[in-house]
Image 1 (cartoon, rainbow, N blue to C red):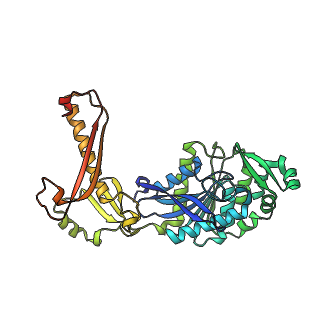
Image 2: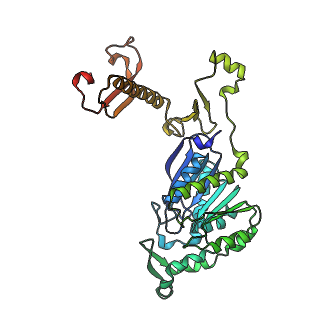
Image 3: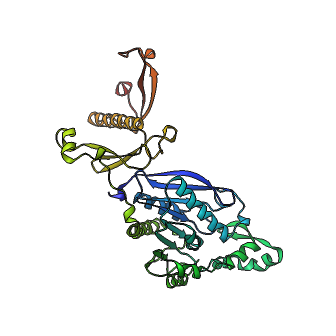
Length: 398
């Protein structure tokens, strides 16, 4: 299965934190069965929608690895007060996210953390069962590293118990409890006990978290461990090429440790080749449809070198991982209509602009149909509206 060509879906989800706040998340996954599920932790005061997180999640999903990325408590679209959070609560949020995945979809096998999120996944790993691979991106070797972002406010925090600081151009309230909490975590002690494969990704030109942090994490870790230099990338991986490159390496590297999770292709009713040929008549199928094994109705549609997904919405017992059969039928009719109009107008050399076809399907009572062959029961009705742009005469449009 060429996962680089797989269709992907992205859906918004929510789940409760350990403290009871509703956390906002996005789940990016292939429309078929995923090779593995990854849990992504974003950088300090960032959100799940930061460019690096969204690009990496999208690229991994296109390579068969589903990714859940979420906003930590008090950040992005999640509930709660950021000022009441700390590194320990971030770890609790990660554990809650892993539990949500386990109970709702599938337990995560991969942890990925960016910046302080990288430190958080290292700290959370011992509390999450079934993790087969961990990757850090520009992560500090000590959670206390983030305190350099508000060094000038430390005396005020000590005296008043809190201070408002500007981080990434936005005001955040940092309380004394946050400073005390990050000082209580010994990340090196956690790393030295880890037996999970680790990939340390860092840019030697990272001006936010120095490359020496990567060296400390790598030195503390046991084999199997790997290091990936991100060359001239910045800390936030703001260039698309850097994020996509990292995702490609992550997918290839993690694949070594989750290979046995890759699903087998399912042929309809496991028919033998000669049986398939008998059903098909002559030659190969132009289109094949097979169950993915994920969910109740999810299907994998192969048309030549193209792979599509199909499913039923949740209201009908499906997982909504792809268009419904009726959606696909309407899409085929609409595409055929637009293509035919384009070919005809090109042959006539008419100044036709954009062609748009809108379609809708519904079940109606046969008695309400004036020209139907039957007047009993219900029948399918498809409404089609065609819009053609361009300076055309009424005769051309007709």
